[in-house]
Image (tube, rainbow, N blue to C red; front, side, top):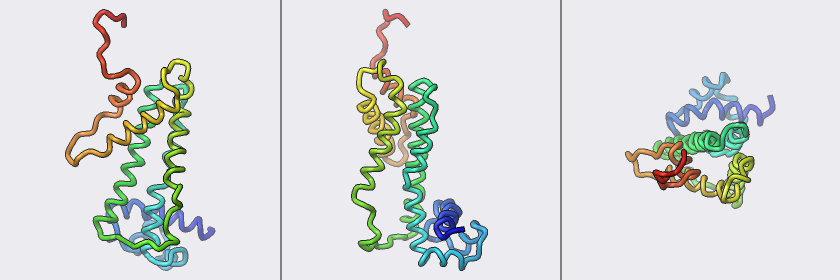
Length: 195
């Protein structure tokens, strides 16, 4: 196994523990979960902080959600595709929040050196890739839509992402309701309209 593959395996084993315990997780617990000796961790990570940072980076990695979005069948109706997309995005956001929240709550506030900083355009590239993946889910219905798939994807992502900025204790708007309002509007159908 290459050092990079070993790092990935250790991070995959560590992530659930980090989400649960934050920085309080021990390298011994991580080694047990990975089925390796504790010393093996330090052959591919300089220290525990580097491992925790790798776990945070993996939780934030957009590759997972992009693969989930790409796996949604274009044969499903548009509303079903968008609900599935919203569920994938919610899971991704929840995963990030759980890992970062656990690390922060347990005191992990490692100062970053200049070499540790993410590329300035990394977040923008991630957002653009997500927008493009959602646009691809909408594209088959282009002829039936008033706005372009690009515009609808942007509005959809705005509606779904704003759903997560609620005060603790408030209930979240159901994803199906967000998609229904996006696709069908907020007005009731006129009583004399044919159904």
